[in-house]
Amino acid sequence: MNNPKKYLMALQSVLNNLDLQEFEDAIEVIKKHWKVGSKIIVCGNGGSALTALHYVTDWNKSISQYTNRPFKGFSLIDNVGLITAYANDMSYEDAFSQQLSVIGNEGDLLIVVTGSGNSENVVRAINYAKSNGIKTLGLVGFDGGKVKQKLDNFVHVVVDDMQISEDVHLIFGHMVMRALCS
Image (tube, rainbow, N blue to C red; front, side, top):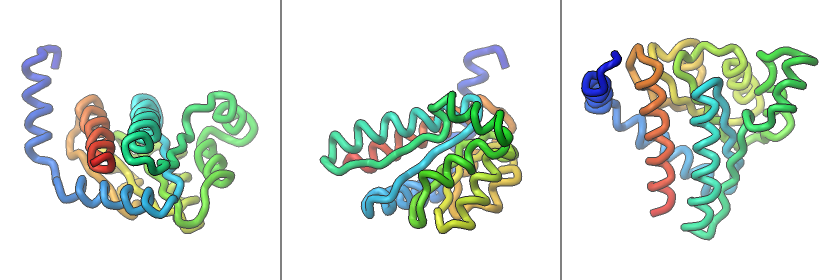
């Protein structure tokens, strides 16, 4: 799809067919955890890692600034040294779950961003969260992969296109920021 018009038409088609209730429910989950002071911890791989990091950047700064209420957002992907240490000493598949075991507490929220829903490090982070009273929310694409059925809540972008899935996942982050800042 190297034609900009075709890409935008495909994106518009996906946007027109989203389950908006999933978006509203997911925003409410984040709002609930924020209001009680829970940590909101994010992770993902590749472009999804950067989307997760974008969430924390926007939410920590803007929500805290506009509401005078701290937003306790943490990212499991922004410390390259820590990720590579876990990957080297244990396995890359455990890099997120091991970090989560150090900073996550019962009542916190883990948000995973994944196009495929099949990354083993994300699956293991969800498994750790669920075993330790940490709620889970996921942004998934394609068919939702392995993680969709494990999540407490999700936003499913039903599309077999990684870039369009990632576009919508990023839009979600902006929706959250606006909803919590208002």
